[in-house]
Length: 198
Ligand code: ZN
Image (tube, rainbow, N blue to C red):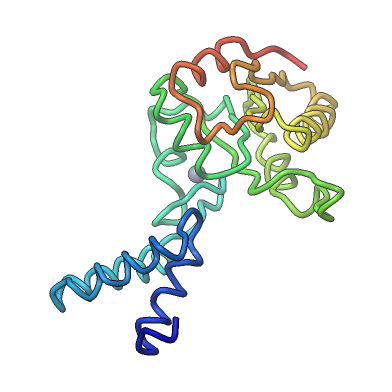
């Protein structure tokens, strides 16, 4: 990158840190920034900083939120007695795209993965259990159908069953080894329809 000035080389380096961005694309993006008007560049930089600064996690469900509680938890239209447990905030967005689920969510922010040193205490399981004191009709385990996702679902189902609450697992309309985040609406709908008690 000697052929570039230090500030440009630095910008290319930053872009290249993003997933799916190779050196070539990073260079193209950096030069795209150079072509922008000053004001445009400032707005772009501000959007990046604000997205990080102004985004919090809902203190109830762990979803992305601007306020203490996210829009879903705040909505009177959502059935608080049905909780859909997902691994990641991106899975909430995917589920919401089906426009079919009217319950609320719980975001684990990960899965149990002993090989990576992630135990039940490192993800939001305690927070989930403490939510189950009220009127809860069903907990749907919508973790990914991966080894870690399955193990996490089994672990949680055992905990919740002792509380006498109905626990279901989404069906594998989603391929094994797949990712909920990238599933299309129909596949996700099928997976939700075919959920079963575990
Ligand atoms: Zn929430």
